Amino acid sequence: KDFSGRTAFVTGGANGVGLGIVRNLLNEGVKVAIADIRQDAIDEALATLDNREVMGVQLDVSDRASFKEAADRVEAEFGPVSLVFNNAGINLFQTIEDSSYDDWDWVLGVNLDGVINGVMTFAPRMKERALSGEVHGGQIVNTASMAAFIAGPIPGIYNTAKFAVRGLSYSLRYSMAEYGIGVSMVCPGLVKSHIYASDEIRPDALKGEMQPVNENAVQQLAGVHEFGMEPDVIGERILEGIRNNQMHIFPHPEHKDEVRELGEEVLEDFRDYPQDPGYEQRIGFENMR
Ligand code: NAI
Picture 1 (cartoon, protein in one colour):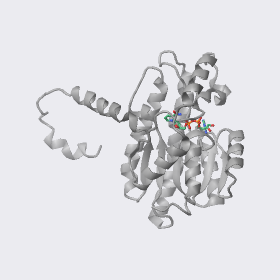
Picture 2 (picture 1 turned 90 degrees about the horizontal axis):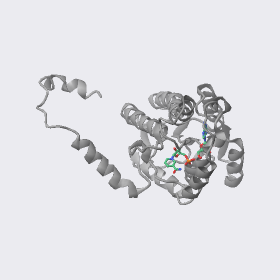
Picture 3 (picture 1 turned 180 degrees about the vertical axis):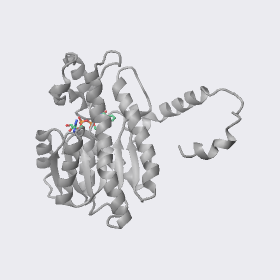
């Protein structure tokens, strides 16, 4: 697939995974909008990229109205968006029982509502343009995580959001297929990124019930993230996944066995009950799932 001439919208594009995607898209001749909440990071990225085919737009993805405005601005300047990367994300490293409602609102607001807002803004536009013949094809790419499959005690809210992004992505993939629009979900393991510094951008309104930031833990996380995969490598693998219209894009092959084990654990929980008598009659309905 040739992406050149298309326009892409990359949330969280000023750092980490998003910036890796942006670089790879620019190399392919795609016009790219970096949509990020950090204006300083946008400015820095634009200066480093030094390319006329990239623009910045400040956006909090959890804000529905701003999302629409940002999309309108980008389309007015760069034309119809047909590659959407719902990638912005934050993390909070604490168990569910130690979390507050503010924690839930913040993490779900960015990691889940952010994806929902991207889909609700762009999917209807892409569908309409496919039906009218104005733009053919395109892809919606949601950054989930290995945490969309593998849960642990610490990233409780993060797991919740990423599992939900997985459900959304599967369903949307079925419904958009008939318009020739692909949907993919990216599931990285550890990436060299800024995510350990998420606290810096937590809105004041959601800080009320916040536990004091554990600077020690943040430093440790920063150290671990140094050993993460390079964003440019991830970006390259993401583009390859889109070219093949893959549902899942797993940049880190080292997690394959965990997914296999999980699948086996799930199957083991099925019991050998006799088939339910009504099953034959409801087959058609079950296929609508
Ligand atoms: P990052 O912190 O380096 O980049 C994320 C970008 O999103 C930042 O530039 C940040 O300013 C922006 N952002 C945060 N909240 C935003 C908001 N409300 N609106 C708009 N932009 C916002 O982090 P990273 O790691 O590149 O994260 C990108 C995605 O990758 C996230 O969805 C994350 O959950 C996912 N991921 C990251 C992994 C890692 O090891 N770093 C592993 C698996 C998935």
